[in-house]
Image 1 (cartoon, rainbow, N blue to C red):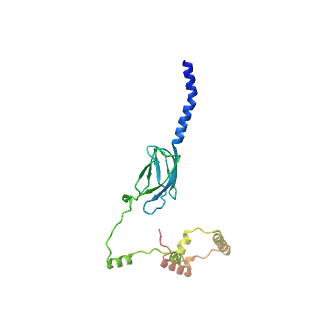
Image 2: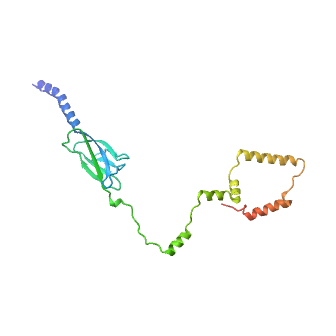
Image 3: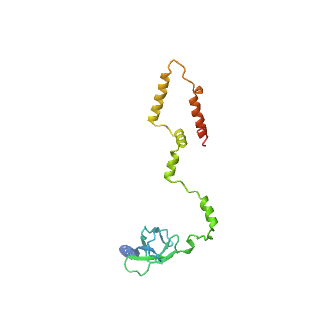
Length: 211
């Protein structure tokens, strides 16, 4: 008798597993759709679609379209910053394994940006603020300032020389060295033209510390 019961259990086990598998397969639903604003019917991107009570979910794309696998009877929560959350339940008696919806979300006024209302300025306040407003330089003005003689000298001291400038400087120093070979080179301290150039450079502010 025991062997007969064991034989019946072994034979009925595959049928029981198959029935459970068919039941589970019938409960799985492909849930998809689009999330849109309730006022303008525009797709909402990056909406969080989460199965409530589970650590499963997805996000809507740039057009608000989403797709996720759920079970019949699951509760799906739609949430996004600036909108009121919405809870939707998959029908338990749904026929088939697909369900699509168009979910509308309402704007949440608690997340609207703050509006600061200020009194209209008087004519005197407007003139004062208009005169004291610093207008940033445009590209033409910046280029004009960079072409100034003083600015060019400052930039020349700070920028490294390229290969052509370095070669010209080396050749110039070599020519001066060979020109005064065997004699003492002149000292610019006794050169009146050098003193004139020094005084002009001093007046222009070439020796000021820009730091």
